Length: 263
Image 1: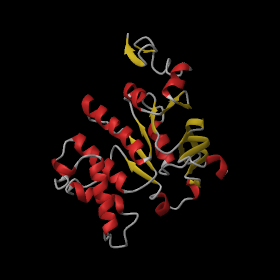
Image 2: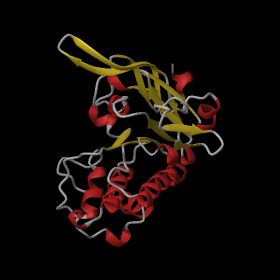
Image 3: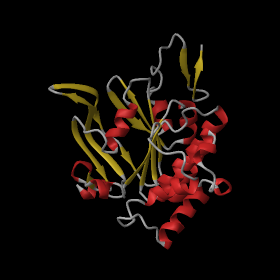
């Protein structure tokens, strides 16, 4: 198995995702086989309710799979202890219970928790990682501000910096452009693209910004009809995988411009 998934940060084998409630299984999508390598930016797309967030929660270990396996750096996710997993995957979720009374630098410092001692003392190495993360997302000028003083766009960059400070090979983000205007949506996704190349981290995120994802991502994962299709934007366009993503009476995919348009 290790030979198959070497140089691969994340791999799923016949993964089925969904929820169990007592003896009832709600299967959201099945037979998901995806592979993400270092330095790749990957978007998970699909209509509302398709299972984007469910997939990310399963890949991060928050939700148990219905069937199949997830591997993170050759480790079975199901067999990995939480403290070890925190050194493999960092999460940026849409709704998080984070105190905005913290300063920017204090919030970014939380990314070092997997490495600090029981009283949370920061070493010189920790401080260096924190400052490097702040520099990577270009928020040095607001590092001493309280998070409750920030705009939505600034706060999203702080959360990304915290994920970078956690020093994992994979970052998972659930709809990182929610509540942002068009400029800041593009800014955040372009930032993620740059970070994936500069840091060689694998970054996967769920998004409704499909036109932006088509321009910026190395790969897409499309969830539709309880299946997941993955490939480069060019491969998915060529295979017509995007053509029936939305009801075609209102929105259609234009191959000439590689974008969705309103009829």
